[in-house]
Length: 70
Image 1 (tube, one colour):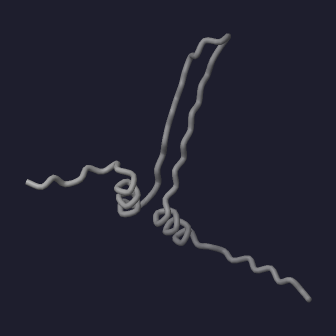
Image 2 (spheres, rainbow, N blue to C red):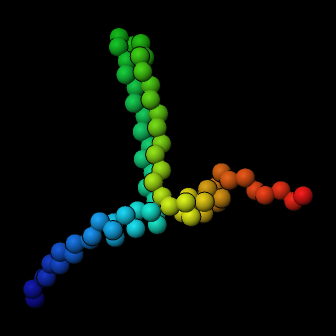
Image 3 (cartoon, rainbow, N blue to C red):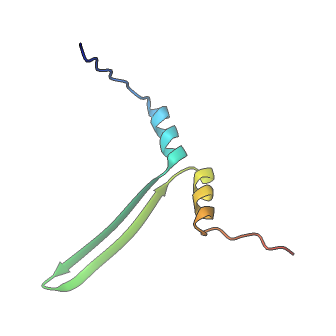
């Protein structure tokens, strides 16, 4: 019984479409200290997603403002 390998290549458009559909979050924290003295601390969160995807998940965790009834 032979095992077949399939190398499926994705175009850049397919990769971008999938990233925008699912979203990617990069969370980083960098600290530079010298002799126990903190010189620089950088905290960053980068979110790459379509507006529709971000709104869907932001609403689920309560990051978007709910429209008030006037």
